[in-house]
Image 1: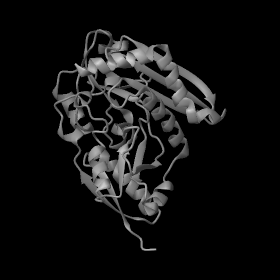
Image 2: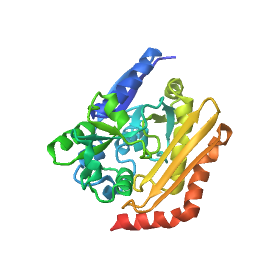
Image 3: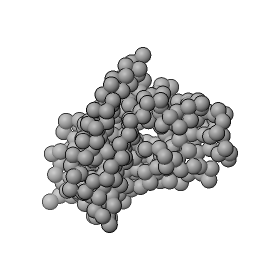
Image 4: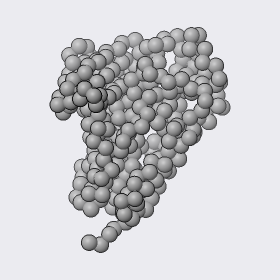
Length: 308
């Protein structure tokens, strides 16, 4: 069989390129030939509006989806939390790489004591904003957009007290500073810390190559978290967090999920441990529990508030 070159599509930010090169090395180590093709996404170009105002799910993935469908690239590498739960027709999940750090962290300017007084925190995420308001209702939260490097620079250039980042992103490109606090009380975005590789469903050669990179434990945990998100109909616009951890000793899954109002005043959460055999519907049933206990009304309120 003629060995084709697997063209890897990626955004052109430092973090996205790091992720693409990571997949490239893994494929090269298995004997596959690769080429990296970088493209700019709409999410990187439009920086003057919060993501939820743009009204597009998958704003960071759409450009690469089009490039794949047009046959310009064979695969795309994403931070899994940026990928919509419903993939475009013809595109399939081909590999989930082993998960890195799942936590959100607060990067501050050398003085973490500000959390007890009125302060200004930056984040472009509704989920982070809502959880921050829930814990610190007297704080101000400002919008923060751009790639990781841009956001770190904006933090230095403004008189904000701190900004929230995914730990994994900063660690991957060695940008994690000394001045940070682990936000272990904040439930991360579904699939945070995981990398997803997608391919065309009819490209058997590439799918076979990528199947060798798949990490089954991460695949199962992120599947449950994204099923929870999809059932709540979150897309990129509702403050929804979910985290599943696998306990190897007991063969159980620990699920934490949360849905908040945009202002953080309402918080619906679920925390349960189940046997591994129950994984296929865990996210769905957890979301149903939230919806039946006030979540349906809260989701409606969130949708209406974001239309204004």
